Length: 350
Ligand SMILES: Cc1ncc(C[n+]2csc(CCOP(=O)(O)OP(=O)(O)O)c2C)c(N)n1
Image 1: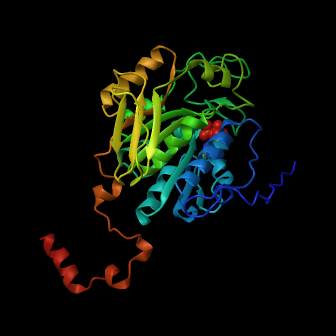
Image 2: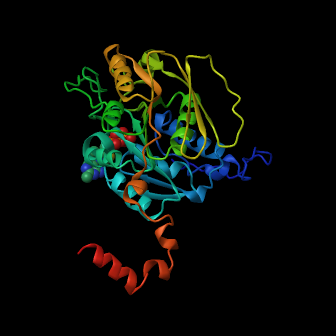
Image 3: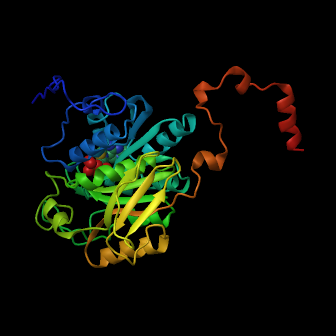
């Protein structure tokens, strides 16, 4: 079937602060199955970038292989993009980020792409606090290759062919917290109201921002007995709170009840306002965040929202003391500082 995306848009479509409409943030028409959770996530990314008035040419989308990794074709069609090899998105993102720190890096991956073949790459991107949004569209199966169980499929979950998964799952959110990721969130593709502010907060975060989004596969893993089906997720979801992101220099006019509210200032001066449901959980305390995730797991709940946030650590560029300018903007004098500079470096080794 051929899908033609209409190019006509209503002339009065709302514009953002830099004069663009949503159209400038859309991509090609999706060829995923109707009802795929991944498409809802693409729509949330479009909305978040439009709301934040991000210049599309200041975004780089990088992905691996899978239905999820195909989605960068379906959002931000005016941005840079690189569809890499299965599980290798983080190393391509690392190279691109080191060469140009001035872009917003969007890494899109699947649970197969991240939790199996790409696991080694994922954990090292976290360790290095690479400044990027790393979003996993988690459907518990290999959608593109027709629904085999992935490493995030829950123990006892039943797949479409009726077989029961006999293995423990990899819990990507707790793994990320354990490895020291500085921003860890969890959400559901069916909850755009929660997902959009989470993506905005992740973009504002300086460092590795991980979002694990449960994204049901309508074709291969939406059956009774699957713990990644729309029905199961809706029945077991437990939001940890509500989140607003207030850009720098804007007036903060959301106020939550004292005691449940937390305000965190990000590196760029914008503020995250978080309304917590549980008073015994502190999203800036790693042990507390870990406990909240584990407690939910024991209670067979899927907790969503911003689970953990640290803003005091520098990103990979701070750790490596890289130059401020993107490499392609360095001029000859900066690239070749001359013999005296070389002599000074050589002398420092003696
Ligand atoms: C090196 C390599 N091994 C295996 C494959 C086959 N393959 C393609 S996509 C995929 C898994 C996709 O699952 P996931 O990342 O969860 O994405 P989804 O399609 O479910 O969104 C596999 C195993 C491949 N393309 N390359």
